[in-house]
Amino acid sequence: MKTEPPRLTALRTVSVLGVRIHALSLEQLLGLILHVSVHQERAIVAYVNVHAMNLACEASWFRAFFNQSEVVFCDGFGVKWGARLLGARLPERFTPPDWLPRLAELAAQHGLTFFFVGSRPGVAAAAAVRLQAQFPTLKIVGTQHGEFDKTLGCVENDAVVRAINAARPNVLLVGFGMPLQEKWLLENWKRLDGNVALPVGAALDYMAGATPRGPRWMRDHGLEWLARLLIEPRRLWRRYLIGNPLFLWRVLLQRAGLLRFED
Image (cartoon, rainbow, N blue to C red; front, side, top):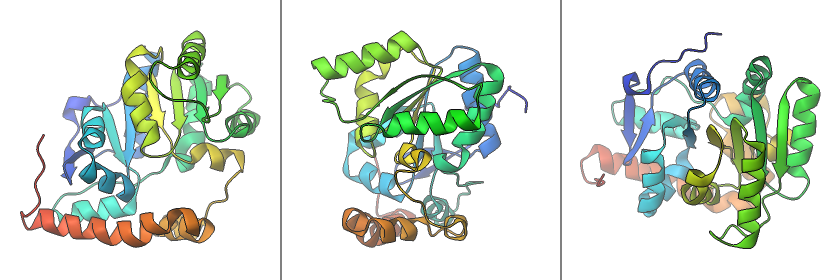
């Protein structure tokens, strides 16, 4: 695979509920991550799904996080369909648990390093072990669970920042879930010594085998939200049963010109 990606300024963007989303393919995304890492540049590579869109409507700081990030990609079929309702087109939907192994393979080939932070104690370490078993030459330079005090300036948070900076990873995977992972990056990214920050939600749990995923046919046909709801109904019922119709309503309001967002 070629390592030279298209320039970010040349990528077409789509605006959905006030959030700028890059209309790029998975190959382009992987190329961008590789390019930033190899050339020692810096970028936050964020994802948006229906849950993210709803949060961005309700919190201006969260919307600003995406609009200030170097790359924002479509992680959900709902967002892709929402863009179509607004007369725009996003070429693909791709979610980190599906393509992180491909990124790991590329990282191993180019000598790039990973650091995992997030989830319950033991999960990030287990994810690292399983991924390294798949790609033995992959360099994972550190792991850290997500159950620490993330308050800016506190002892525990500063210790995690120092651990990451000591490892100087090319790719930092952050799995606190939305919106905690974005808030933490917003507050800490400028003092972190890494190239790419990649919020990944529950990807570490999936990689570690700590949380099951729905069957492939559901994931490929826009039904991963239903699979997640069936697996974790008490935690996720509000996000999907209320959030999905709410997102559609907001998109229709934007389409009718009745919902606008300030930059």
